[in-house]
Length: 232
Image (cartoon, rainbow, N blue to C red; front, side, top):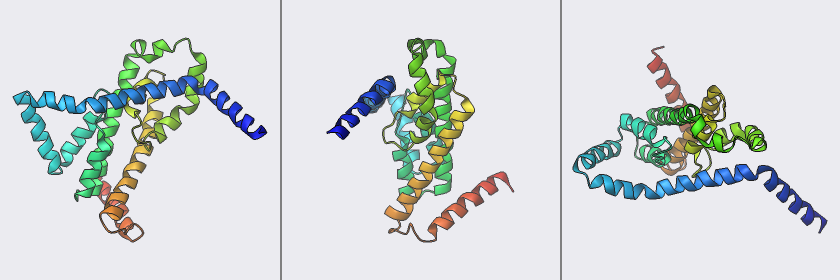
């Protein structure tokens, strides 16, 4: 009975301490879900315009043909908070259908990082007109948010449906250092992409060879590609 009361008190204290953060994250998660849900409607509107429909089908055909350039473009655009395309599904599609995993990882990584940097910059530029203005009197919220900011940026990459694009906008309003945002975000994203590529290519696609030397060849391929790009 005593342990139950202790747990209840801890839960109440956690809610009291982090209530604003929980509410904030719930709101932006809801917004993210709404944007994803509205995408079929947006596609139908695009399909209704002949010029837009032609451009859309051209881009779609390039993705179907595993164009690395268009993977970069789509992931860049999809990482902007006002578009929010789930780029992970496109990444998986490329890997599963035999696209070069090194180029696929690099194109997705740089596309996502540029898109999220734009989100961060939007929040920084329009600081006076964004959520920071609504939170200006909530010093306790900002103090507690500072403690979990870096963790959210890093681990947000691994949480399904986590609205990290909206989080990037908000963090841009909090005077968070851009280099820290880029470092934590880059680390989380590149680790996730490598894990996803290994899982799809060597577990789903290659008959569970994840423990074989394919992993060594995969890492070796990444290093060789980087060296060739740098002409070392």
